[in-house]
Image 1 (cartoon, rainbow, N blue to C red):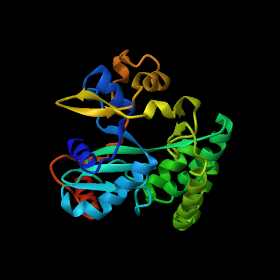
Image 2 (tube, rainbow, N blue to C red; image 1 turned 90 degrees about the horizontal axis):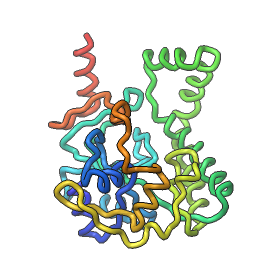
Image 3 (spheres, rainbow, N blue to C red; image 1 turned 60 degrees about the horizontal axis):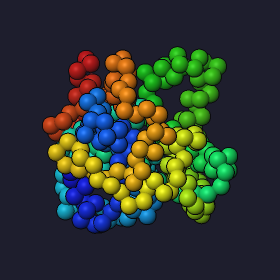
Length: 279
């Protein structure tokens, strides 16, 4: 996060801590003790500029990487700023490796009623889901898991649809998603939303005023940028966010198929390593 902040300050890029990171800043003055990543918003202009600058300047930062939806094999509708000296493989059906990361969510400002916004956004979300399914790599174990999960009558058509349509046509699906996003971005306004992350829920549409000039809050041994009205944002998202959840809910929700905090593995090397361990 310190490296991310340094890059943003150097290039005058605005970000806002969000999600559990924003809760952590207010409630814990740092990481939530059971959290394991950092989440930030960037408005679309800063988001695009961040990716563009990183693409042209990444040779100056050999220890870090940026991965985005559209990179072959990557499967999340957000961008990650990650440490190349570490290895995270989240789930076996998506054999894509990155490092310990900061999640960067694009925040867009749109207009219309909730129903109008949701109709546009959910059409895009469905296309993004098809593209993500096209990044899956099936093996016999995953095939059996899907059939066990959905049953043969529902599971087999799903598997065949993913394998015979989503995967071979994922680039054309991606082009459709880009066209849909371009159309949605033409609806500018004062309501903030993260397109493509989830199906639209009313409490995840925010007034633009909450994201005016950010404010700084202490976070561990440094400080981070927060939404101007972070109390309103967190209250709308989480209700009484200062109340600790029950102990039974204090755990990370992220996948951990394989993690190494001391080195970067290549995917083929790691597959061989895991096969040897299993055998």
